[in-house]
Image 1 (tube, one colour):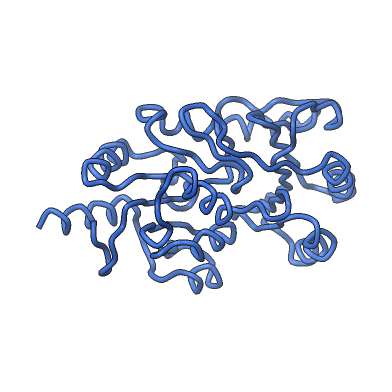
Image 2: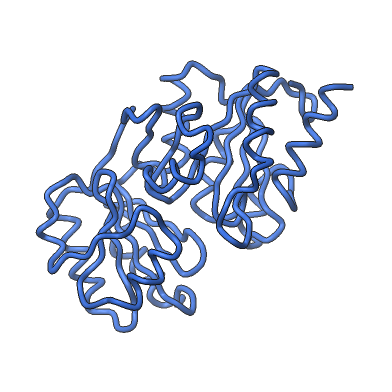
Length: 267
């Protein structure tokens, strides 16, 4: 399929703020569009800060037909099999979590293997998360009780990330972790070098597709690394200015844009 004069064989899309609507669900039309793209030789990849199990449920009708870049690029899964995974060392993870514990009025989430964890006695936050995520988030007394590998650590401010705290975390951890604003008040930490961009590069090697023949959609800071890897990139009109500036084009509605690509290809 030719788009903007380039041959495109793979389309990658972020979810929240990009492919997902306000109800945080996929329009059923998306599944038929992905099927039609496949018929035209174009593969689809879902890329998100979300966990694999949550992403799989969102794509349930076609769950085993697409690969997933999960946890901001720290993991990729296809047909239930983990293709690669990057973990934060436990020592560094708990140093970070101890720092987060000193900040008032925030919530934290730890992604370990394919599960999400938060702390006990956070009933309101757990209810809010479980309205948003499936399967349900698990509550633990102490994060040190988690035995699996830690893929991502997130801190959440209900009113948005304060500039002072964001700067402090970047100064303290940028040399040791990948720190990124994932939108909606979330600041995410993954292993150094782990990003949607590096994950997409690794997936391209494993799946045998060309990044120059890849088009991507995203809306947040955690999508910029992906923009830089792809032959064509689209930022959502609702994204922050510095994110939009990194993309080749601007998009208002991903589903409508995919329909336009398919219509043009038929003519």
